[in-house]
Image 1 (spheres, rainbow, N blue to C red):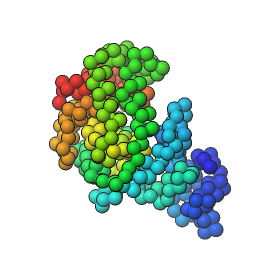
Image 2: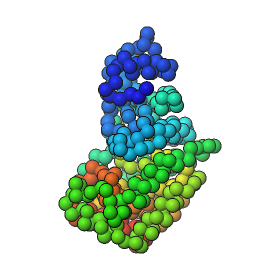
Image 3: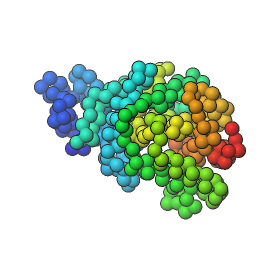
Image 4: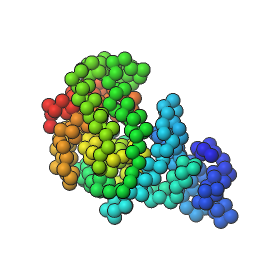
Length: 325
């Protein structure tokens, strides 16, 4: 049974009762609501007379873009991630698993309460050094986890590969940037026709699809970071896989650069990450992530002028071609 915010309380209760998580004789559901906009999956906050919790359910398509098919098994990857990341240092930064039901593609998690995702940083144009260090520390703890077996998550990676490394750089794209910002389509063309640039992007894309030995979050950007006061949580690891640390850290670097409009944070990240990094690969991932977020489908709530986006795209080109540091 599929659940969403329009499902009746009675049917939600029946579903949760059927999987053994909820007993209507001793607990009553008071409300079913959306805690925020889920990109990949349906996300609901269930409030009862005793507690509240988060229900996540995957579909055979992307929740935000129903026209894009996606593997329904992705919710299992998220479950496996939370199971794998068990060290004490990260325990307080991820939600607790309450139950999982593979048959209904349901993952029930601790409700983190009154949090907000850190997309507000794009408007503030600032990320604190203390926040960067905390995010680096959380990432490094994820990367230290050593699951004995882990899903390859290849179907979702292939989908993500298209949206990161391929579709944003097609000369003829079905996605019109005219609907995003005047002049952006023309600006993008210079990068979409740059064969040297696209060759480097393709190389990194192939590495993304290869099997690595580091557990990754896979989508380490402000939409996956939640904050309550000064405390940071990391959620939504459905893109997780065993890969290379530079991918997570490069994505973090890209969004830090887009937030601040400054390359200085890249140095902070290189120095602050406790593990060894291939700095060229890190820079290339950062550059690709900046570009695909500016000229691809996965747009951000990033209010920047065309001139500022041009500056970011030039920074990104330099990072990809190893002409910036």
